[in-house]
Length: 122
Image (tube, rainbow, N blue to C red):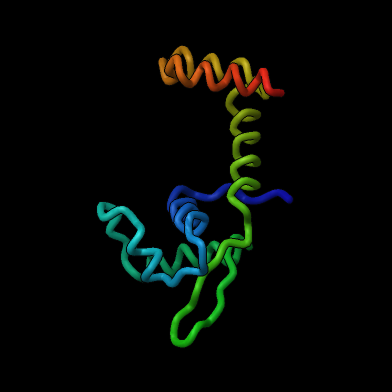
């Protein structure tokens, strides 16, 4: 299934929900946001509403609170986004992607070894 690319603000909330082991209230989500974000309650609710409309979260009423849980698995979304970035920015070339990381000195020797071990396992 294809998903819409999420803006960073909505993706940040999804990452919190993906890490949780249970449905979360808005307050619980806000508590896990970095303090520097300082988002208002209405902004967080707006993001959660958009995520529900896009089919990323389920909302269930529990007592007086709404609880949010992910409908989209983190792995599925990340796999799709990785493929999209690879196509858009690197012409679907893994070699160009890795070269960009390496040339930008973003890869350590340990990461290169991990990549080599992964490729060998394939």
